[in-house]
Length: 624
Image 1 (cartoon, rainbow, N blue to C red):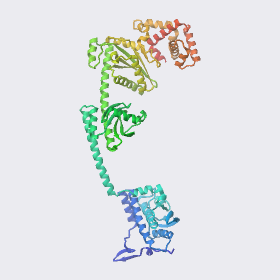
Image 2: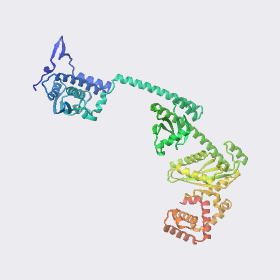
Image 3: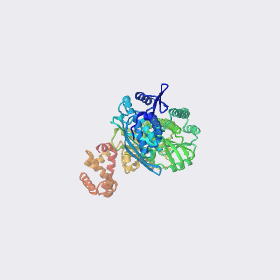
Image 4: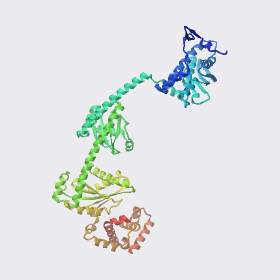
């Protein structure tokens, strides 16, 4: 191929003081002006749009030159490829040369194409460095566009050229490569996503339309929220709020508590809700993982669900339900359901404050009853103010609790959490009970008529079981007084309950005062000294100078006697081996100096141990 000159390609001439190249009106533009335009474009339309702009500009330049080269019939296809770098260089874009070439054609179909080469002294890289300095990434968008347009026009197939390295990022030269677009796969995807962007004016029009839609959506959400808030301010309940929301959205709405029990609903029957709940079959864990607005699918539709937060904890869930034929408008509905959750949180907070206030009043009233401040008639009259009938039989209950893992912050929280859990338990069962709080215990006054002929022990067992589920790593024990009819005797009854709870244990958490037998009758303020003498005379040195070792032996003897002297049952309860149990019993025998198998002696020891647990409960507790 003979060496080409600029005039061979452009046929430059002047006519009427104007410049023409190949009979086309032309202008001369300096690379500095090009660089200034590039800088302003980046500033005004962004780097990504600028890439597309200059790539397309270069593409058209290359396409025009290829059309001229196509007219030279004497050249082979590879020779026409080689003309491209020559034209590129003659026009001042860069010193260009091809280093690798490959073209495979079969049945007039291009099977493979690959062209690789080098650009030196790229005008585009030069201006980019002057304007922006050396930065990571390739910058010769016009040159790659030129090569892409030139070869695409020659082959009639879509090709794409990209830089593998660039002078603009500090490399000694630019290395480029061209292949069929189908061969680049995801490597060209980023650039073509930029190429498909809308013109700025179209994008602005769409943005404006989207803003108008968003404005209307926010107006609808704001109007709905204001109407719900007005209902709240008026003091109306959740049903009236859901009524308004259901009319606005024409969607079924449900509100559930943390255990997925239905609290309120509108636009759906309870039976239909139960069918949906069963179809959803969501586990408690899946619900607990819902921390924000979420879309859940079930067999015949969809639900948008969001948690209700109260004091940093999830206390329930709000949901919109959609049947299969209706698609959720997520943008609007998610905002509305989120605001409904806020309204519900305020309602729950109001209800919580009202309940806590009432419980405080009831607790203070219970303290006054126990102190003996009022007469029978005064107590009955004041009880009417809290809708509680205190005429009839009642029991006093002492519920003790302790946290298994020592943590001051958690122990402080435990008192409040236990009070709330006990209050909620009885409220859910429709039982009106007086609850007072003392150190590490709750005091309850429970009327038998409130139990609706249920067994009080079974009711308290249900309470303890409920508390274990609600509050981890805690032990709850309860003592029940004897049945009383005179409310002024509550002070005596509470002492009975305190005596009973001292005999409760983890395997038998509920103890009734009647189970104390003769001890319950004997132990009182008048004969406490005689009871202590009985304990000393029966247990001897085992009850003196108590320490953790002696308390351990006392507990071993107590459970050995409770199990009727059965070694296997006692060892299993104490988690000891039989040999370990025998060792302890030998030490106990040495202390007592008596035969532990004597039935009469066993009775006296068990009686003394029960008395010790009641009258010296605090001393035993401190010695553990």
